[in-house]
Length: 108
View 1: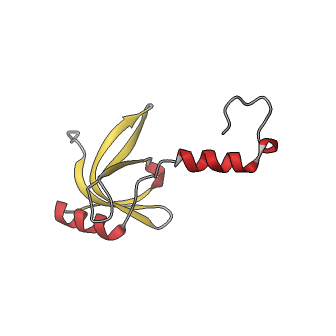
View 2: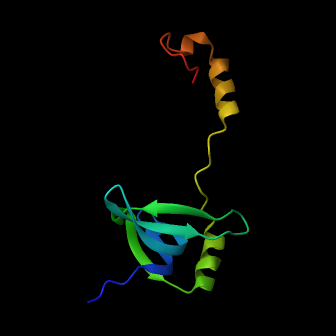
């Protein structure tokens, strides 16, 4: 059997009863093969990428691009949001000097 490149639009079912939809490929990261899911832009979020190890995947359902895009929009999966550094900094400062280790040069 010839090895085919995995490159399909899919609805991926994950353990924990969650789902994600997008263009799926396989990518080796740090010596381990991961499922790369490129989620298309939706009405609620810009396009983003997530990676999953085999142990996190319950099922991979190949679908058409149109079906994957519809699922991506309805599932409302979001990328990880970056920390708001200013809010974090303000929170640490509001806790006062007793919350900071004397050896720390960095306040957070």
